[in-house]
Amino acid sequence: MGLFNVTHPASFLLTGIPGLESSHSWLAGPLCLMYAVALGGNTVILQAVRVEPSLHEPMYYFLSMLSFSDVAMSMATLPTVLRTFCLNARNIAFDACLIQMFLIHSFSMMESGILLAMSFDHYVAICDPLHYATVLTNQVIAGMGLAVTVRSFIILFPLPFLIKRLPICRSNVLSHSYCLHPDMMKLACADITINSIYGLFVLVSTFVMDLLFIFLSYVVILHSVLAITSREECLKALNTCVSHILAVLAFYVPMIGVSTVHRFQKHVPRYIHVLMSNIYLFVPPVLNPLMYSAKTKEIRRAIVRMFHRIKM
Image 1: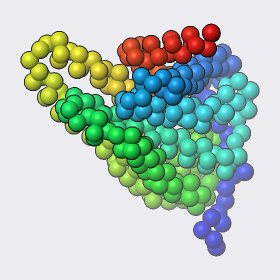
Image 2: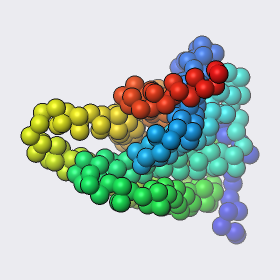
Image 3: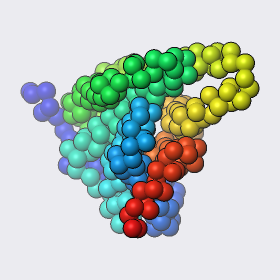
Image 4: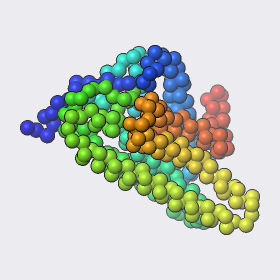
């Protein structure tokens, strides 16, 4: 018997929000608005960084990477989410589900890596400003972006095959309006220990380590900032980190919430689990462009100039 000669359903059935099926058409409006803000806001930032010479600096290159990952994440979930809520079209082919699962987890890991790279940018800018330009050259930034991308695809490459080797015969109904690895493996009528161990390895070796290094970088940054005698300069240095700290919180707090709910799911209503997962995937791409546009005057000015040129 071949490795993948196992029973698979032809398709999966996606689920919206349990208990609110009758309200899905009403929820479609806010979801469309969130997607419009996420795609529109991040696309504007990408374009502003591309065309504005004043934004051709390491900080904004990393921001453009973050915006790209947010656009990619939104595009990965958009087709099935809108089909589920707007058209009540819940079917997704088995292979299409595997592809979506891989893309969602990959872009999520990319975002974590980019947030870590941005923390390094802040560390160098505050703790070693004299060498900022020589440390973060265009070649280094490109290398960091490539490393983040390659890491995501290499580490997550086995996931579709780990699912494909499992016989799916308990049910074909997923818990969300998109495909995730933990959700799919629970439908298997076979031992899923390998999948669980590999999933834990991915979580610890990437997301947990990224968060740990982000935390350590801010410990060093805070130590350096508190050593500044001028209160005004101290606040100015801290203010440059606010947007990034908010982006980190918007990404990792929902992730920790999802992990906690998943661990104690037997004692938590199902709709809470679904709601936390939706917040984790939908909220960061919406908040990131809003936070950076609101807190970074250079971004605001560049966007205004860009739209002014379009009107002319």
